[in-house]
Image (cartoon, rainbow, N blue to C red; front, side, top):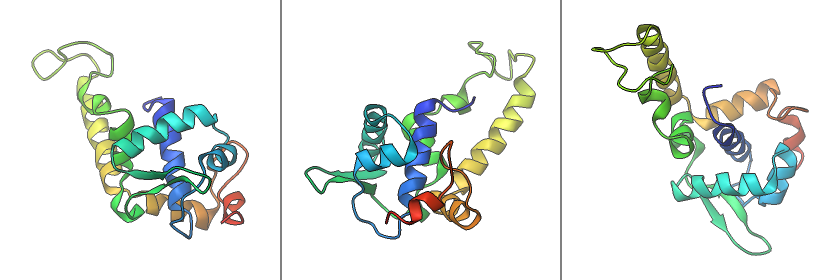
Length: 154
């Protein structure tokens, strides 16, 4: 798997928020239950996204999180960089230190091309695009189901 579990959950949470019709704060407990993610684990991930100015949080009985700016302005890459950082795009696929043009590993050339394509896709895809596609096609966002299960809870 290219992305960490934290990053995958951060992407799922961001898509969940981008799929909402309102920009009200969503309680983390509700999001945790809906996305089938441990509350404590999700809270730590959301703190990372908040620290990176992707989300904003509000404490209290009506508190929760929401996107800090429009989902049209937040890319797949923004989430990946906030949680996993640039390692996917800078490190050797085989984990060899110093891998590069001068001292490549056997996989270097193929990985460099694939990595560049992945980077371009992540930079050009917004979370709103993905959320809209998920809603329109009722694609899965959890192991048990797709976006339809969230549409009635807004």
